[in-house]
Length: 373
Image (tube, rainbow, N blue to C red; front, side, top):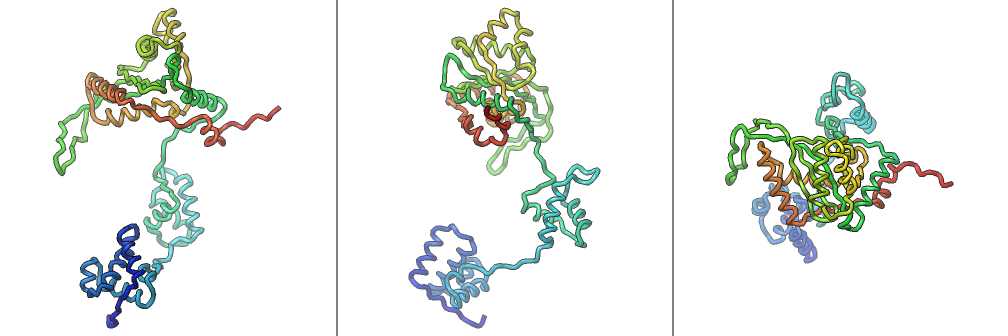
């Protein structure tokens, strides 16, 4: 470093660098170069600048030289770094992607980086190929063949569309106290207890609980939520039989909506969700009395996301049930407290998916239109 470069900024350049540092929305390296130039313009030595900006002396030297020999833009930027040549050619990368998307070798459940590297050695002329090279090329293509999602793949036909639009139209209706719309579903809950008492949290220390636990059976939750008003009801039962379902329907009619002319119930296709369940639980006259006040609407198969109560069950699990509870009575008290708080807070589901949006977003899923006669 025999050459001593002197930095003299113009008023415009000084203002540009000052503004850049005040905003702080640039890359860290570029901001450090701006600090170096301003400090050099103020007459500070290279050693002082390196210590203040927390960079090496060579960085200060290169930045000043690029400014003097070039301009401000060149001093703030950096030359492209060539890096090492890519191990795989374009065709070889395409072959890697195709292999990762294909069926794994016999006896293996999924592709791993090791398996893919070995397969590429057999398919190409490379003598070696690192796992990191395979991982980088897969990441560039958004592939993780060792992972997969479980998904309910529905059969979208005329029946699916008809049920979907029926439910969406119910949600879009104006509130009618005489004809309320209630979403209904059930969900199991495991009763899990502690083997050892958790250690409470302290400053600087998270709460700690033992990985070992004991199971105390399961219970069932029947959950109702009103589509048009901020009300929900959770009932804890030991089972979810047809009789339990029938008693929930009677409570809807006689306790929760005694003045409604017709309660429209949105539910899934579980075998117990039927009018026959009421005849199995009650005398014929009682079952008929209840059913006269009910109107069932079913979501499409494998489309539980269309039932608004699924969202509420998710809220219940995250806000109340995300812990170990081993006693049914304790569970009931906690759920009752959560329910009262949610109802008092007038919490509602903001449903935004409509029939018009379904026809626009899912138009490819709709059956082929019949030819006009």
